[in-house]
Image (cartoon, rainbow, N blue to C red):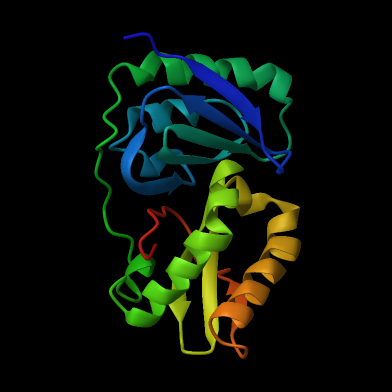
Amino acid sequence: MDIRIMVQSTPNPNALKFILNIPVKTDGKVMYKNLEQCDTNPMAAAIFTVDHISEVYFFDNYVTVTQDGEADWGKIEGQIRDIILKYAQDHDPNFKVEENRRSTVMGSEDPEIVKINAILDNTIRLGLQMDGGDIQIVGFDGQKLTINYQGACGSCPSASMGTLGAIESILRDQYNPEISVEIDGALGGFDHGGLD
């Protein structure tokens, strides 16, 4: 199989998007925050062997790699690209991940979550995915929506400022004028995107 890879910058200067001509995750998405979480994903584990890597995110046909801001992309981009190409041939895009305790706060069948996700799907989510990231709903109490940024969005300065405001504005316009949106500061570790 002829596996090709294209590297694309993202709005986050600490994240690059590695786009393949094959799928890397056929169902859902997954974000790893350290090597210990990669037991079912050898490609992700190998990426974490590169110095200064802080997150690895798998979705559809791309891998977004985020560094801690201390590395020179010119020095590590080629290493990451070579790792992805080396592991891509044997990578199983149907790999399974364990349920995250926090991601099951609310079931995705909740009609309010379904409505909110439909609005996010039709407005902001595609743009975030094109930039190498996404958002996950981790809680909703009827008035306050708690989200977690994923991939390139996770450490992007515009995510916590402009994008958060845009999400809240869209949901106030299309869902409930009283809704507030906040970033979940407590969500730690491995995240597989449970509610979206």
